[in-house]
Length: 389
Image (tube, rainbow, N blue to C red; front, side):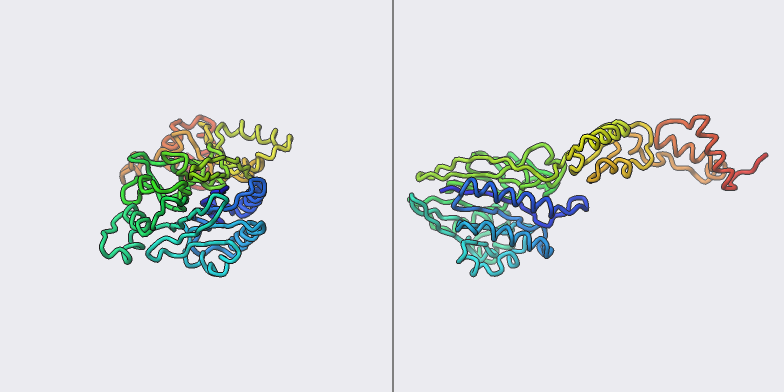
């Protein structure tokens, strides 16, 4: 059986105030094209379909179009809610959609939903396990203490009746660890240190393949058959280096899972560039002359200048319109405004010019030069703050 594994679409997300709906429409269209080439029987979406529990109408429309196109070829689509989704809203109409091949797991109700599909080698049971918190499971586990996410997942999986002749595939949206080893994480997701949120891969030993969602960096967890698909787009600058891809899984008659990665190309890349202001302006001007489309990437710019730059952001946006973050790397910019507080006597005896000079030194670690002192004197004079002798 051929399977495609997706996760963490986060449709409707905004990144540093920028809407990514256009980027998401672009990447979903690309995913559809690759699915037509791969020709899987099943598409899995392992949670965080939306970015919010109450998605916008434009986000709902985009997902509706995606599902409609996925189902055109008669394949099955299996979806679980993640921690960003509302299980009740996401699964609305699920009993109707099942007739079309769209299986959306609802809220956890004591045991996981199971969808049984067939290939030429027999049955495959797909276990749909939505994001679980201990509080979600406790009402059903009257005889078992449920204090951690691992307790919750273990209880849910114990409700299954495994048959040795069957192959099993799990969809899960949890923070999975390998022993004491934490997975790769990024800024765009909740950062966990392990503990009560972590679920060890030892709970998944009965599954031929485990399709994970929750973490945005694609990665295998201890074995190639237990994998995070990752998000199809980069949603933070900590994801700027690893590329994104579509995961293809070929499940053999014996239950062996062979994975293939198909790279995804975004409409706008997410990356960081560093340098001095004038060098970046010159580079931007050259890129504009060359009609280089990468100027429209989503950027974090780190300025390394030692001098104060007036209005760097609007100037840089002439050439790089999608700057999401601007950081001033020089330590002088990060120095507290005043490291030594002035007492009352200091304030009485300190002129505005002297106070500004001290402020300037604290900010730049440099003294005012003669020309700057003349400018400051003229400003103070025009403001009527000093008297001519």
